[in-house]
Each structure stands twice: as C-alpha cells, then as structure tokens.
Length: 328
Ligand code: MTE
Image (cartoon, rainbow, N blue to C red; front, top):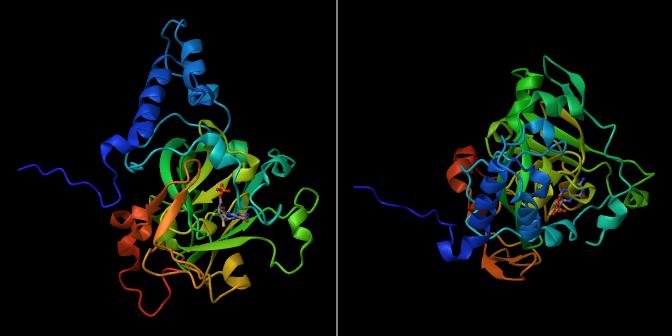
C-alpha cells in the first residue's frame, strides 16, 4: 500500500501556494524561452512573454551570470517563498554594519573581477576566476528555508551548485578533515571592518562530511538574478540545516585543513555560538528561545524544526558525535 507521508516540516498544501505558483510560472517562462531574470517579475513578465511565439528554453548562456532555471525539486521548501524585496533588504553583513539596513551600502562591493581560491590540503589548488567556474559547473536552482540564529527566517530560491562540485575540482587529500571558508575583507567598501573588536575576516568551517552533503550549496544567484551584493554576491555558502551565520557571504578562499577552524561568531562569543550551529528548537540561545521563527515579509511566527526540517538529509552526519554542542 502506498502511504503519502508528509515530512515533519511540510505545511498543508493550501499554505504553499506561492511556491507552487513560482514553479508553474518558471515552467511557463522556460517553455516560452524567457530567462530567469524575468521569472519573478509577476504579471508584468508574463504579459510581456505571452505574445512571443514559443521558442526553445533559454540556454544557460542566455541567463545572467550565476543564474539557473533548472529547479531541483529534491528539497521542497514546504512553505511560501519570501517576497524578494523582504529577503534582499533585511540582511546580516557585519563587514558593512551591525544593523539590517545595509543593502544600499553593499552595492559598493565590486562583483567583478572576482576569484575564489581553492587551497590547502588538496591536489588541485587553484585560484578560479568566478566566470570560469560558472562556465565549468552546471548551475541549478533550489528553494531552501533559511533560519537565522536571531529567530527570523526566509524561504529563498537560490541558484548555484552543490559545494561538493568545488571539492571535486580541488581533489582534497585524505588528511583534510575540515573545510575553512574565508570571505572578502575590503576596507574600501566595507566600513564595518574598521571596528577592531571583531576578528576579521569573517570565517566559517564545515567538516568534510558536511561539505560533501548534497544540501551544502554554493549560491551564485537568488530569485532568478545574480546574487545581490548584500546577500553575499557574487558567491556565498548556503547550509540550510544550520543557523544562518554558517552561510558565509562573499567567499574568496576555500581551504582544506586538518584542524577544526574557529568561526567568526565562535571567536566572538564561544558561550553563545559554536562550530556546529545546527538548528534545534529545543536548545535555546542563552538569551532567547529558539522554539519559533518570524518569517520575513509576513511577520508570521511559525514553529522551528530540528535541522530546520532537513533532518532526513543530514541527521546521520552527527550520529556518532557525543559531548559536543551540536546546536549552538
Ligand atoms: N557572511 C558574512 N561575510 N558576513 C556576515 O555578517 N552574516 C551571517 C551570514 N553570512 C554574515 C555572513 C548571518 S548571521 C546570516 S543570518 C546570513 O548571512 C544572512 O544572510 P542574508 O543577509 O542573505 O539573509
């Protein structure tokens, strides 16, 4: 007998209309040969598209850099997409400032030329120009839930590729146990760097097994457009089962190392932030509960799920780990 099992985080169908509408719209636009940049343009984009006779789907080359329309349905978000404006105007980017209103200031971060260095314990160390990477690795689109440790959340269509594709390019040596992510620290365009009380640059880390997990994603676009600078453009990490601070923005270096990297927030306050930072509603932050989250755009308060609802894909990564703070 076939039993339809709803994942623990999935909402009733009536509440996910926006995602369904998004899928349908993208499918229609694809069939019409309209690129991803228009996809969320709503009625306007559709109206513009309708008179055009059907032609083959847009080739990746026709899309803006870093963008894909190949939606990967393996990880359904189970809730409505966050309005683009809400997701792209409420940001955490401490290199710019400590408040959320940084999107305009972030436009000063040059997006090209940009290179990302694969380094450390690997057989193929190399500094890659981002456009060469984008030509080499096929892009896809994924809709992920994002849960900030501050208890706000969003649901975003990202473009990019699995982090494992970069690991394949670098060919890590067997001694590599962790991946360390270094992000841009350019004082000319990042005024927050002048605060010496923060341990710049913003660093993050994952175990090799976490980095190989298919959910770990490198984002190069958002809402069918190149990644906006305020959201980590042109290239960022996205680990949706972890608190948002693990998803480091503006990556410039990915290094394979033996020792567990000290991440930015753990270095600032090890009593409140750790290395693992997996989402768990039952482990409160020392200063607030993690039981619920506020959705950007609507302000709706919804229950938080363990591993942000992605437990079936990642819980096994932590099965053998004891006596470590997995959820802070
Ligand atoms: N990456 C860098 N380089 N600097 C930051 O301050 N903030 C993190 C993460 N990545 C941060 C960063 C935090 S706390 C969150 S919640 C997410 O980015 C926010 O991503 P968003 O602004 O795209 O929503």
